[in-house]
Image (cartoon, rainbow, N blue to C red; front, side, top):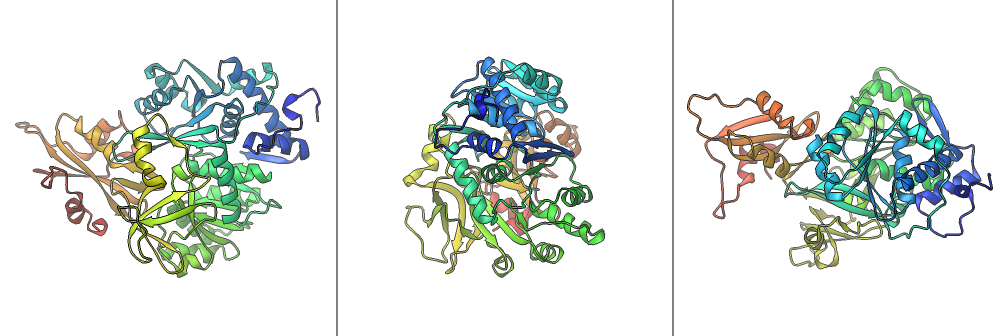
Length: 521
């Protein structure tokens, strides 16, 4: 320990936020492995040192308690360093989806009021466009030579005592209005999430190697890092890009990874590749979520990795995110269930009057607990709606059997889950409405063998004498200026008019029964 380094002084604070966790590991296990990335290692001492230096950099840029900093970056150790350094000052990290377009990211920047944007070289063109279009962003820092130079010139920032109930993250999640909402998660939320993961994944911190394959702008990624930071478990950060099951298995083998989360379509590819070319892997826990898994996939997972615990996790961003867990033999015995509610969350299944429904009946699942977000950022109306009756309304309609297993029977049909990514129909519809040839538009989900679901656009066109109808390809080119590619409809249906009820609202049930009958219920 370097006594001249205030970042390494023993903390008198009883707070257990993730910055204090890193400092503790740097004191107790300085040369222990903290992170691995592309074959390079970072020890706990090095991680603590770099975070303390970047904290100083941010402080000199004027960042302080309550400020917001946007992170637009691919998966890499500097992503975690940025989150930790931002939080060390009592500021809020705002991770954003790098697949978004510049106008989409600029909206999030302005909505959050972020004044600084941290990015990396591959995304610097997008970051420059965002900075040019944003009214709030006044500066950027790019990981690479600039970032490393700033660290060398920086000092070690003295730790700031950040209250547990202080906000740490703004995680944007869209709603049925099509406008993104920022779920404000506190340090206490992430501490509770760490405990939830430790119990759900049966982690004990000995001879374990974590793995972060999800994009780090997802709460699934940051939520999976939380238990590793608490326990001092090394984590392998995997680059994002085109999913390559062979390359991923090679990394799992070489790094000795013990815990892995993927979406079902990825597990399907992993199982096929492992059967084709077996690797010697040390997986103890194989977990999945973000989309339903068929019995075929679950059986393949169990057969391919027979010594690993099979765990399904279910939740949402506002809950940091895990609310239900399904593990072991129950994964097949209770096929279709998302599991039981975790011990760190209180839940009820209620009717429209907030009265508990009888077991087996359908109602909305509502939550309370230490992982529950504080609010939607600067959106009191949405916050009030979400917390009606003193419980958080998930929007999921479920039934619960006599053993307490939860089955999701419906959800807001205006949300599509495609390859683990949420696509909100209202957001896509709002962009379609601005197309000069589109008079009416509705987006629905269609079951897809590869992606789980894909969006389908049903449109009515304006009269244009002699003009050909727009094609799906032409629409895709036009949407590319406004929406991330994964949100683009994969099918275009042209109709004379959309079906509407007496109130003038589009009857999406009728559209689903016609164009996506498997999803009509």
